[in-house]
Image 1 (cartoon, rainbow, N blue to C red):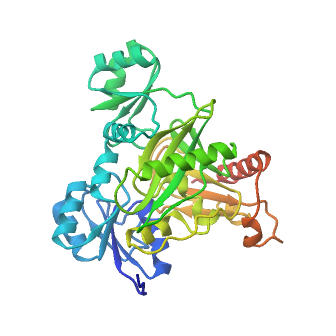
Image 2: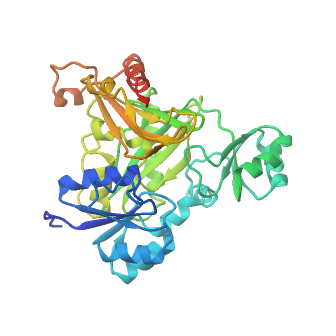
Length: 398
């Protein structure tokens, strides 16, 4: 294929922080981005060429977007898969990943069934329509994680259940069709950012994720586990990709059990929070990879440049208020730290407002090339994690 710049214009359904970082990554490649989002002046709007204001299931907004671009993608599972398929056909555009993949992934029960049918390891699960179904699941599995089949993210829609007496309340909390998954006593959660291009597949090294209250707090590279586990995680991620159609980046969350088994937790058909480390920590970021992949361009290197920790900046407030982050010098004064602010106008409790990335060991005499050859042991990862938390926790909302 021949690639020229300025390149095509990419339409993105969704204009949150992922859309913002996609537009930032697309610009150096000569690719303009137009986003569709229901929130006027959404986080992506300052860096995208244009925003179409409309809901994620608005036919006219989708058609307006399609009329302005050369290819389509999405950064949120709320995008209407049928509409994507329809406007892509109407305007003769490519849309990636395949809307059929989006339809499969956005329903967690359908997703798990498809993976199980393909022989990909997943925790035992079952469909739950009501409290009686949930009590049956508890009889079968013991403790379970009750998950809303659609719409859940950042822990929303996930309810741990251990007691049959909690069934009615848990069903009400989920608020709709659900699935119950056996509660996995995992040693750690890993994630692999995998990229499906035009006849090529690339995977980033597996990261280790640290959660609190079901929300991702930090991702650590290299993960504090064995080479054998990392190789198995990569194998499973590639098996997952073989079940999905269309080009793009996929965030694949995995459980590592104390016995060393790997199973798939969930898949995101888009760049993923646990892959934000790639902006500073990898040769090519997940966002640039997604742009390359959906356009059918050659993929970049997924090589780890340096030991890296990404720490989410969450809303440390008790109630919603205008977003203003203070003490930013805590990041700016540190030579190994980078700040990414998502441009959200309102901060809410535990809302993702940005992230901080800390790389390497702070040895200013080492070039990026030398850093790429660095191996980090668990002790180095621990120190880097503590450093990232210290910098992140020094940030305050005024």
